[in-house]
Image 1 (cartoon, rainbow, N blue to C red):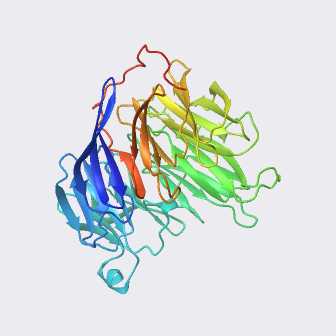
Image 2: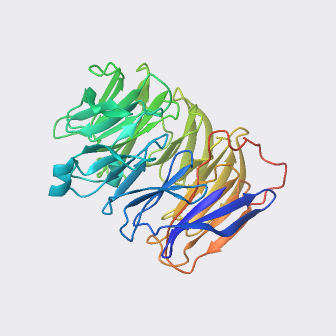
Image 3: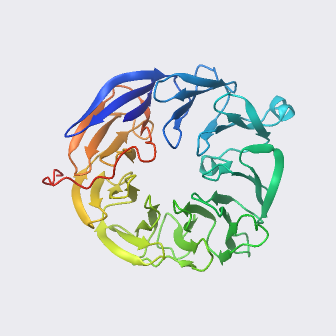
Length: 430
């Protein structure tokens, strides 16, 4: 396994070996110093970074560190690889030169480095990035426009628009992962006396949604598809809580099945904000962390039925290990690094530990290790990272004596790591 580190000195790839104990090597190889977070392909084969020295966007073979191509867009601000890493999209501030040459949102071939499509898109928001969303097989590509979404052939932008979704005031959309039929969820916020609306479309019938839901007190939304595209959970929010109960606004959770037969609010057993929601990797269940502190955590099945209660605790985050066997319930940010590791198959807590100062976190692709990092600028001192085993045992700690901006695992290829149950050892957490 590998871990990528972006700090003041550049980009570094380190090897991670894990058996009975975990070792993290010194730099296996280095990559360019990047202006923003570098990005791995979903299968870990490629790594893309925006060179701070002005060379452009560099795409690396992540196994060898060799440059695969260099894209001549030194002013790129956003990068994103397509699901199968065939393409990479970049966004730059729109200039007269870029407008005349086709646009500032560009799609490039990752093998040749050539431009395959260009669009003009003036605004950039991390919340709405990436702008272009492909289906998992890259057959379709979707691009938001005013009051809707344009669909293109995912491998053939040159043929132009092949479908259009119309949704007035559209602010968010999400393409479902998984196999055919391809599905798109859309959201439009409330406006004056008009309710917010959520719609589900199934390709190729884009003129009529299979499901529509309207509601007030919803000015923003996150659209969370199950990994197999069976359902979407929509977390809506407002900046102001009309009931006056919360300073942070009001949030709700809506469940929509992909066939349009099931829709409604997720039944939550405690008042208060919705802190986090995450589907299991298999897409058969999801966990919601919600309510005033101490927050509850509940497991729901794909029919939106509550099937297990994790109790209450100082937590605002849930993260599934890639195989879906283990999960983490944690309290970060204004909560002092409280971490619980659970075996979801046995519905048993494996450990409860403290990981103070954690600002970023991630499971390893083997599902056995959990990375907790302290990054700049959230914390300006004590930057570095720790690696814990699923049973709470601290395996490795790296204290880095300068600013660290990113620490992340290299993703694994499908089937690369076996799904292994917890070893029959005593609880190592404290």
